[in-house]
Every structure is written in C-alpha cells, then in structure tokens.
Image (tube, rainbow, N blue to C red):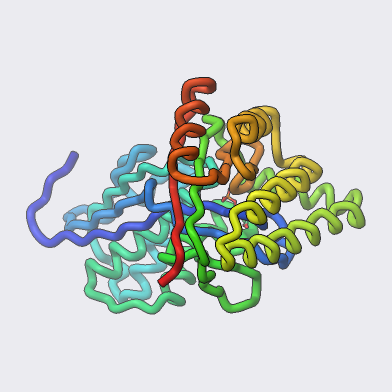
Length: 316
Ligand code: PMV
C-alpha cells in the first residue's frame, strides 16, 4: 500500500435494502428502501504525484487502466473533478467496502456515493444532494444500464424513503419498530440481466407482466401504510405477496426460495428477495429482536450463509 504524508479526506456511504417494489420501480411504480448501515463503503483521498491511482480489492493501478466493470467509477471520478474545476488533480484514492458485490445491497451506488463525497470533502466543496446524485447517477448508468434511481437515493438518505421515478423522493415516517433479518445466498446476481429479463417478459407477454408490476406497486402502497402505522403483520403479508409476484416475474430462484421458505418455517412474518434477485439476498421480517436473532442464527447454521439483523424504529 502506498503511503503519502499530507491532507486526507474521507467519504462514507451505507448499503441499502429494498423493502418492496424492486423491478416495478423501473416501470414507474413506487418502491420503499432503507439505508443499511451495517455494511458500508469508505473512500479515502490523499495527494499523489503521478496522476490518479486507485486502490481497491478489485483493482490497484492508474485510473487510465481500470477494468471494464470500474469504467463507471472512473467516469464518475473524472466528472467530479471537472465539476470541482480540478480536472488535472493527482490523487491516491482508496476504496474499502464491506458491502458484498452484486447481492442487491447497493454496492455500486454506495461506492460512487462514498467516492464523490470524499472528493467533495477533499476540495472543501459544500455540495447539494442534487449535485451528489447527478454524479452517482453517471456511475450507476454504467453499472445497471437503466437504473430507476432508487439505489442512489437510498444510500444517500439517512431515513426510509418511498421512491417513484419522476417524483420527489419522500421520507417515510415509521410508526413502530420493524426487525429484519437479511441472508445472503452467496451468489452474485446480475442486476442488468435481471432487469433485462423482465423487459423481455414484458415484450412477450405485456398484459400479464404489467399486471404483476402494477400489483407490486399496490403492494408498496400497502407497505407504506403498514410502516407508517407500525403494523408488522400487514408489512409481513405485503412482503409475502411481493415475493409471489417476483417469482411470477422469474427473478426469484431456488436458492432465494429456500431461504425465504426456511425463514417462514422459523416463524418470520414475511420474507422475500431484496434487490434484483437471481442470486443476492433475502429480507425477512421478524416479530422482535429475539426472534430475529433466532432466525438469523438458524439460517446460518442450516445454510452456512452470511446473515445480518437490522431494525428500524419509530421516526422522531
Ligand atoms: O441494484 P439492485 O440489485 O439492488 O437492484 C435495484 C432495484 C431494481 O429495481 C431491480 C433496479 C432499479 O434500477 O431499480
């Protein structure tokens, strides 16, 4: 690792969880997401003397030679420096992430958001949310092709949000405590391919596919009310209904279904995939902390999978 003395700046961004509405959100339906701070990206910037040097788990070297999957990040760095009127800046950029890649936990949006924040901090720039979002969007287009924008909004917000394309993002006021268990199938899901598969389905069978997407939108409205009222049962039912629609749309798979069913057998009130699916993670809703711990421990024992417990509480 290269060590240089002098000024450093840091940018941090959490992961995200989609409660309901993934995929349907691409077609203009609402979706609910929450920041997931148990996993995060930290970007650190220092002065350097030979252009821009990137240090990360996936790549170490000059920005001019990044592999294809980091092209979005490279474009985002260049555009941010242009905005900061410092396009020739020479920087050492370290990216450290605890967000597993391609598991629907918002890793690509969080990397871009942490990076842009670190660059803004390094140059002492007092940014507006919109400016941060526009730059993160650049990287997201490379990563996802046609992102709805929910990921970048969720990782740059500290509260649960209800997101709908072309509408202002709303903060969701939560009326009680909700205890979630997240479990990782251990398989990377390809968001681009999953979104593409639904588009294909839509082109082949628009009526049925549209019905599912509309239904997912309506499930999100029910979830919104359940969260506002602190109604665990109603949110659990909504999550189960969402999983059925996501199965119909073909983005669940055997590994996801196994974790969902096991969570339900262990007493979860609801469980579904979270994010794009076809691999990635599931999210289950438990009655309380005690039950969440029991579900997380049992899933770990049975499937040897990584699990997290995350709760959200009544908004102030
Ligand atoms: O990045 P992922 O895998 O969490 O998927 C984001 C949610 C989708 O609705 C599947 C895609 C999008 O752009 O909204």
